[in-house]
Length: 468
Image 1 (cartoon, rainbow, N blue to C red):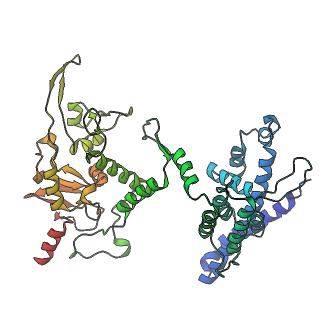
Image 2: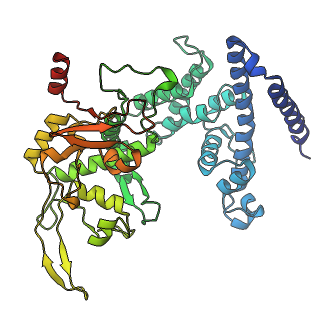
Image 3: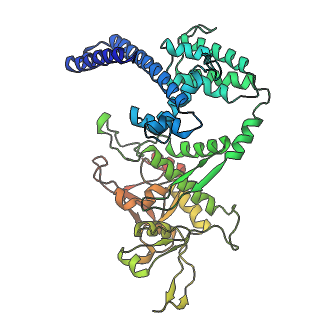
């Protein structure tokens, strides 16, 4: 006999009627701010009660799928490989959400005695009680239990339960400081604090685990790119995050102090990259800086060098593909031009049968003295609003070297990795006027499309202000 079928059917009918009525009556749109806030809180509480039912059901699915005989498992009876696959099918969730449900269920489901069949306490009884009362959902359960579970077996079960009781009081708004009910993020902070206080061994065991799990793996190249996976140690992740923060910090979109800044929706969208794409570009810039620093170990007596091979005719006409040493996937001409713009070029002439006929000398790279001078003149990436500092920039030949452009300060400007790589697609135009870079905005950027002198050099900006 299905004890939940009718109550769940009635609940589904009521919820469906409420949802349709709210949409037809525009209930949320017509509510005052106070009413809307109460609606959001009530809907969230209903969602937590629904999650409690779901977590309980998932816990039972897990119990019935733990039989050591595969053919006797619930998952096998329903034609699924494991619980995650079954939950994906039943709940329409993604694997990550299905895994979170299982972790929450494991923390709060009551144990069942294998001998007597008696129902025993859950690992965290107070957390389960808060779930049943609609106080916390999946996020809250994991926020409380995950940090405390990581201390096992160094911290006793009773101590972990006592700590969970105190954090649950914070979730109910009954904590010692009398604060309102805490959200999942605050509950995680409280639980982590208790975990650190109870773990007498300190951070060393966790650091040993992190050291064992550290990894960075490049996957097989695909036409869409090369997948990257792994596990960073906390300090390494923090260092990488600081690099991302330096690149992703909001920048002023207009560098001319005497040009009026548009208001509101009139401000142009100068950068349509997602955060993930911006972090990729910051990582690429960091790799380029590291490779050029001279601090890395050498390979064959030389600094780590990205070698790109391309047929001269293909490069001249912008057709065909280039090949990057160390990656099986070919790259386009735009990539080859970007890499070659600020790199060393060596021409190798081959006969029809492949015999090397002539090796040219390495040429066209900007030396460190030229780079310092260009950095003093430009200050950083010259695209207005970018703000990437000189140390993270590459040097771009305004007139391509292949078209006779010299490797001279009068022909080199600073561009960040992103603007250098996608300059043609983005639409910014660059020219040199008596050795000074000027840019013209693309059509989507504001209304002033004249050539303008650009710099973020403090000395040049100060001089501009004083002479205006």
